[in-house]
Image (tube, rainbow, N blue to C red; front, side, top):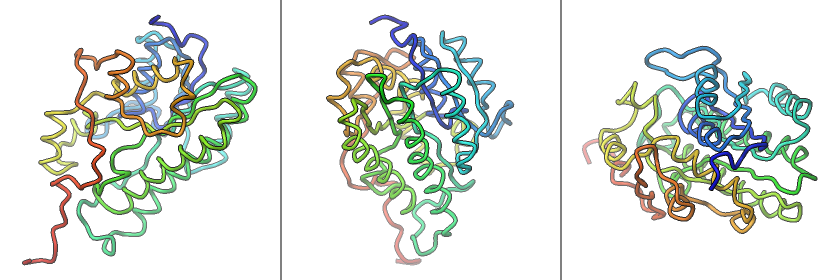
Length: 293
């Protein structure tokens, strides 16, 4: 498989200043793609909130790709439209959209009953992370039509089928998965694929900077079974390189399962274990029950 197999591919990765978005951008860069990366943070982040567009674009160049950083707040439809108008002007079309942008509260409610979760948590995660994916997808498809191919990838997680953190989080992930499936149905006659991809337990910059962001039992799982964000980036690059990707349209795909199929590894040379498709909640997310129960 050529290391520059995506040379000439025009891609958009939303929410690419850190975490999975940055890892996807770097995985595409390794394959030689041109990547437009959106994020709100242009300059280098702080020690407790690492990551920025500038850092991602610099690392894309080091990895062998071409990166263009575009500041964009995905809650602003006008700003998002400007991103795709820019791509139309500069490139004349688009081959790949990766919907990854996601907004979460500074403190994620964990095992908090839904009737005690602020409605603002629902609004935040469904505005930037579900609605924003729909808007970006709407704007991307006209740039893919007529090119003979096209791929939309929604990054999601097992939270789409099993309880994770709280009700708004799970509904958001389930919506992302369902959106990919239904978009695939409508896009199939046009030769454009749409899939949802689940990374495993991600070793993110934010988690390294703020290890108390997740319950200790989950942090232990991540330490033992985790993968770098670049691993899912290599999964997306493999999909974008596959001339038969339409065979996978509408599916939920796991990065580790794709590694077994396409033969890529994480940066340390291993293939992390795949997350479970079992809908049962992880033990760390068992409901606490009433006080004193």
